[in-house]
Structures are given as structure tokens and as C-alpha cells.
Length: 226
Ligand code: SF4
Image (cartoon, rainbow, N blue to C red; front, side, top):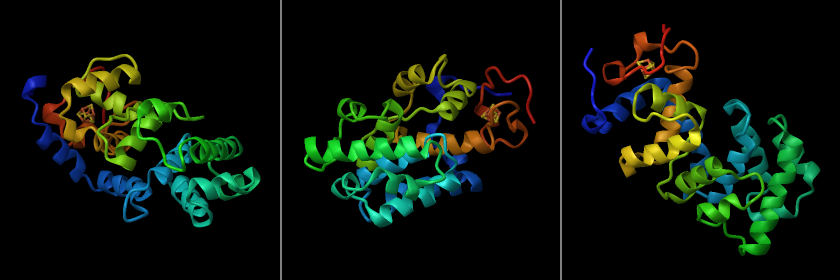
């Protein structure tokens, strides 16, 4: 099998092949609905939807986010809502009660300390309750269009299997990907690899037999596949 060295990788061809998978394209479209719900991507909606999405399936996240946004989609409106009402709207998202408290706290901080504008730096975003580096990078990317790599378990696994990086944790993968991945892919790498990781390069036994990037994959650590 032909292998490519990191420096030889044709990133355009790789991402073209990955994004052409129907299921990957469908998933990416559904994730982008969060950002594209308004004509101009709204960082506040992206931030809240990302909080709601944690440990929650996509089929639940999108309707739950929409229910909340139909009632309130600005920091001022959400900050004034009773926590119980937020919980009611985002139910059955995982940990919906805790998330309702987090969402209201975030809205109040943005209203009171940031003049109702979502801050556009990683440092300020991660200072908000419930916002880690992963969420902050997703908001920077999808909400503001600022290049930032959001690495979750799927991005970490796929990037390592393909041999793009050799890292032990998602945190280290973020820095390693920044060094090898062209900047234009820093934002789409998350929705594409998350979808690809759920559908083709799955945990356990990946579907290498029908993988569109098999020829350029190092299959690091893959001992069994389908
Ligand atoms: S060839 Fe297998 S391990 Fe490599 S990306 Fe495709 S599914 Fe994943």
C-alpha cells in the first residue's frame, strides 16, 4: 500500500474525499445549522448550542437549542429567564438542569461584563462557566470565523490513526494539528472528522474496507477493521 509522508499530504484531496461521503456531509450540515440559524452566524447561539450538545445526541441537541432560541436568543433575554424555564426548554439534553444554570450564568456574565457581546478570545471564553478549550475553539471557529481547531475524541482518534499526529491526548492533538494542518482547515476539520469518526473511522473496528482515504492512511494502532 502506498503511504504518504506528512509533508507530502494532499490536504485538499483528503478533505475532499472525506467531505464527499453523504453521511458526513449530512452531519456537517446539521451541525452548521447551529451557526447558520441566522443570516450572520451568531456566536451566542453557537456558544449555547455547544453547551447543550455536551454529552447529548445531535437529534436532541438541535431541537433543544431551537426551542430555547425561539423563546430567547440574546444574553439579555436568557439572563432574565428563570433557570427552571431554561431547563424545561432544553430537556431532554443530558444534564439539562446543570446546563440550565450554566447557560443562565453565562448569559448574565456576557450581559453584565461584556456589554451583551460574546468575547472573541480563547482566554475570555474559557473564563466563562462550563466553557473549556474545546467549546471556546468551536465558538471562535463557527461563531466568529476565527481559525481555531476544536479537538474532541473523534478528531483526536482519526488524526492519530491516519498518522497526521502522534499524540496521547486531545489537548496535545490540538497543538500538533496546528503545526501540520493548513490554516484554512482549522475550522472545518472538526465537523468533518467528527462525522467521519462516527460513521467510517469508528472507535473499535473502523470501516477501513469502505474508507475513501484508505490509500493515504497509516492506520496507526488499528489491529481489527471491517
Ligand atoms: S483507513 Fe481505516 S483507520 Fe484509516 S481513516 Fe479509514 S477507517 Fe480510519
